Amino acid sequence: MSHVRRLRAQGTPDLEIEHQLLRSGWPRPLVRKALRGVQPSGLRRYTVPAVVLFAISALLFVVGLVLPAYETLAPDGPSTNLGAQAFFLGALYFWWPVGWWAAWWANPLIWFGVILRTWLPRAGIAGAIVATAAVPLGLVALTARTTYLNENLDEAPVEVGPAAYVWVASLLFAVIALWLPHRREAAAR
Image (cartoon, rainbow, N blue to C red):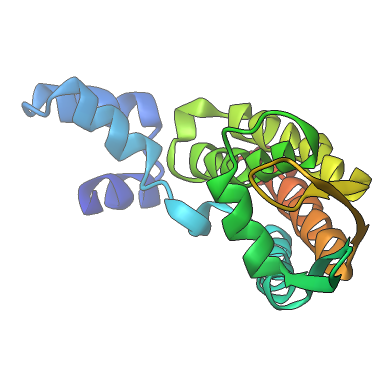
């Protein structure tokens, strides 16, 4: 790689550098990689605004875990569940495709989108598209009106707490960060 940098510093065109490296026995994939340069990986791919948005998203997610997520107005008295309880109950009931428990699927969707966009550069914008699908799914949590009290499927009214709104906000910040261009994409503009 330092050989390529030295030739570029001398003003040698990339095509000539490529020919020199191939004549000296370098394999073609390594020549292309040397000319392309070292690409940043992980969060280093993102611009500073995107990293700040990811940090805000993570902070909101953690704050949402400790805030009240919903209050069940059961006949024997109201009970409040924190965001962490709602998260783990959602993980238990992930197979329940109806109602507002389906909103829990926004968590794996957003995480899968972040992994695709961050660590699989060839996936391109697909990670942002997958993560964007998490937002409407997450909004389903705000429509909760009843929940099941027991295995007999007795229902009780529910009031959505601030954790649900904070969680949806964290999804939105993560999606916005994913749609921002990577460093290479921003440099090309």
